[in-house]
Image (cartoon, rainbow, N blue to C red; front, side, top):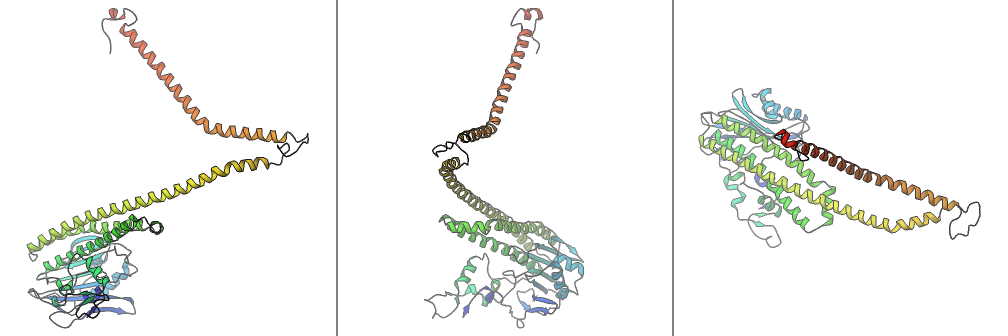
Length: 444
């Protein structure tokens, strides 16, 4: 058995009940697929794949309906059309708008708790996240943008992590069992969580809500981890002093683009900090929401705060790397200007000499021009050049001379003012006579 990638293992959709079935919405009106998943949980640790009928559970049973939107949609109107086609009825237009709109939201709509953390476009960016949920006592409806790792459920005996694998190379081709590619191993190293087959099956709606928020935080953490690994690789390559790499990073504007992506990620985390505390507050008032799940939401809020600090450290690293590249670029420019200045120093005297002896006037030395009518031409031109040079130098020197004169006049006025004040004080104090005896006191 050979596993080529994450999708081959993560999208196993079978359960202990009926056979697996994944619904797709596709017709001539919709150019892409919309993936749908529907589960029924019996509150005893078992789940079943069910039909997409948007019905609520009976008794202790509860249902979960998940819509996975494509990452290549054009606008929010198209997304709203997708959701209307798969969620209406029983949902109304108000419910659709609350799930699909941008920005953070948490509140009650028609008795159901609705919350969302939706980033604006571009949808194709890996730093754009959309997760929205509509929670009632016996059903949960969620909408996500693209695939969220570990969001679904798979049988526990189909977990890749419980196998003893062999990495695909020349020495393990004949080995029996699970053989994984190196690319899959690299992907597993970036995961901060288990895979779908290791998910504990929710026993209540509160467990399911915690699971949805937990996978959202794990998804954010995975993106930050991958970004940190990319930065580590870039830093190692930059330490080696590669000229081509630095030039490529500057030309492609790698760090400014990364900084923009990090700002989008910080926006998602900020929205999560706004929404999930309100979710916890509203869920704690529900009699069907377990107290241990409220405590789990508290832990998730702590993870979000720590994740925000980690992203802040990454932003500082990106800023420092960009500053280093800017300094290197400025050094390269200064070095080129130094060579240009050196060439100017070498060729400037030569250009002056060639310009002087190339003038079309009479009387140029060492040329044998003895015509009495034009013999003074060279002298007049040189006098004119000297006068022009004097005017130019005066234009540069005049501001300095004016500043020095202004300082001298200011110091002279200050000394004069101090002298007048001193004479006035001495007169009142009787320094120059018997003024103190006549007045009797010094007036301050």
